[in-house]
Each structure stands twice: as C-alpha cells, then as structure tokens.
Image (tube, rainbow, N blue to C red):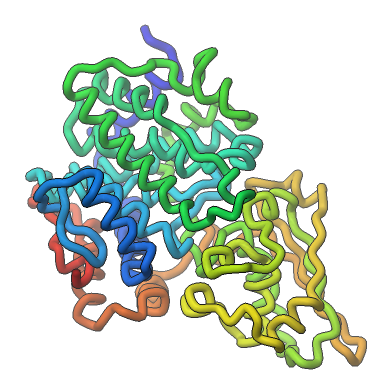
Length: 457
C-alpha cells in the first residue's frame, strides 16, 4: 500500500468526488465563484489587464472558445493564464489564514477555462474547483509561514492546486492525477524578491503562471508522462527545498472534516490581506468614536511582523504599491471614511492632507502577535486626539474570515462596490450563474460559462 501523504491526498480527492456535496459546501462554492467574478470584473479595465490579455494571446496563440475578462475568447490555456492574472490584480481575491495564499485564482481559473471548451457537467466543474481548493490550501498550510515570507505561496502551492483542479476537470484517473500534481510541483515558483525590488506590477504573473503550469501538468499526465510522487514530502520535494516550517500533517489531516473551501476568507478591503486587521480595528474605532481627521494627534499601529514582510511599503511611489502600504491605506480610511477601488487605482499620493495624516501614523511590530500567526493576525490600533482622548482597539481576526462571514446579499453588494463597471443586467446574470452551483438538481446539466459573464471585450 502506498502510504505517501501525497497518495493519501489523491485518494481523498477521489473520495470527495464519490460523495454527495453538502449543502453548506455548495453554498460556499457559489460564494467563491461570485468572489472570483468580482475580482475579475473589478480589474478587467486596468491597463495591466490588457497587458495580460496581450501576453496570453501572444504566447499561447490560437482561436479559442474560453472567455477572458474584458477581452476576446482564447484557447483554454491562454484564458486560464489571463483570467488568473486579471483576477489577482486588485488584491481582492479570496485568501486563507493558515495557507497564506489566494486559492480561488488557481482553483477556479483553470476549471472555467476548460469548461468553456469541454462538455463538462456541473458536478464535475464543482468537484474540480473543490479539489483545487483542497490541494492548494493543504499544501500551502504544510509549507508554512517561513515559506510564505520568502515565496509567494499562491505561486508555489498554487501550481499544485491548479494541476489538481485541471486534472479533475479533465477526468484523470487517481494515478494520472497524482502524476499531474507531481509535475505541477516541479514547476512551482514565485519569489517575493519582486517586492523588495519594487516590481509589484508583476505579482499577478504568479497565479497566472501557476495556472498555466498546472494545466500543462494535467495535460502532460493525461499524455502519459510521470510526475514526482513525493512532491511535497520527499527529500528533494517542496517541503525540504522551499524554506518550509508548517505542519506536514496538513496534507492528510482531517479528511472527515468539511472541505477546505469552507475555511477561506473573503476580502473586505481592496488591498493586501496582511493589512486587514488594522483596517478593521480602525473602522471599529471610527464607528464608535468618530474621530475627526484634523483633530487626530497620532495613530499607533502594533502588528504581527510577518505582515510587513509582504506589505512593507512605507509610502507608495506608484499605484501598484498602494495595496502594500499600511500607512497609505490607513491614512486614506481615516481621512475619507472608506477605502475604494479608486483609491488604489488613481491615488493622489502627494495630497497634503493625506500626507500630513500619514506622518502621524507610527507602525511597530510585536513578537507576541507573531506567535499567534497565521491562525490569527493580531493588530492593535490606538488613536490619540489633540484633546488627549485615546481610543484603542485590538483585532485578531478579519472581517470575511469564516468566523465573521459575509451574507449572500452582502457579497452581492460587495461585488457592485468593487466592480463599478458592472451594470444591473451583468450583476443578475453572474449572481444567477453562481447560485446554480447550490442546486444539486443541476449536477448533470452541461456547465459552459457564457462569455457575457466576463464582461464586454
């Protein structure tokens, strides 16, 4: 008997496909799809989205039927690449505390690209997306925080998750699926050095390449090519080589628990998820005390150190850096009462009032907070007013975490807020399509995503 944890994980994926899908998982899948469409629509008009569409068409050329956000249809491989990159541009795609990555872009993008080209029933599409989430989150959690500080886990674990999603969509046997995941693992890459070198504009390539590599791995396995079997746990596997320190048992623990899809976080703010607890804490103080921005003497932020390894931009020099600057997002929230897509896309970084408030924000780290990471993301925000009053709030979990989820109505409102280009007809169409995954009666129905769901070219 093959007792490799990777083999047990593949067997678990096969078991999930044989079981009825719980109603809660169906509903959560519908929410995950709505989140993915929200992220893609929000970014489809950005110049960077056009760059990704052009890159996909240039490098993965040919006629195709797979829709792309804001562009013409492309072959599945090109569409998966482009949509994964576009859906990651705004930093609003879903996240996960323990795995420290964005699972939806690598789990959903390859499956919907393949569904547009293949006659897949809805249950196969659901199983494939759930498998993508299951694998990327388990691998990401196993790789751990030390890995996530050096590598973008959406890219590294993401290549394996995308291979699993694509492999299930293609109907691979368990043996072929194991090979696909092993081939995908050998293509895992994604260095955070791009942040250190101020190359933030290329971050969206990480999930794009992960999806391309994962899809290619699935096709390679279907063609009969073998992959690494101990691709995580082996002496030259991901765990040994990529600075890992997480629980390797995450690959196989809790197979009887609800699917990992149910443990994800829907993002409440249009920025890096490392900055959510300070924003949530500040929002709570604003709601309770209504501090006037001009009367704020100082703002003290104490946060877990890992946050600044990813989102450590002191003050942005360009729009691409706004998502990673705590002082910028917090000053914007305190000054304007909100944090909008426009604040990230077209910021006035030299605005005197904003700069003056930002200079009154100090940021420090606390090793005690770090010890709670990644299961919690502790942060304390203290506002001192010019009249001497002090307001303080500690936030350990984020709005949108499984413990504090959005309702379906709130997710629809979030979609319209984050995707202002979307009209009422498009919103109804997307909502209805995503809601269909909660209906077990449609499991055998063909599932082909219409181009209208992806916005006008």
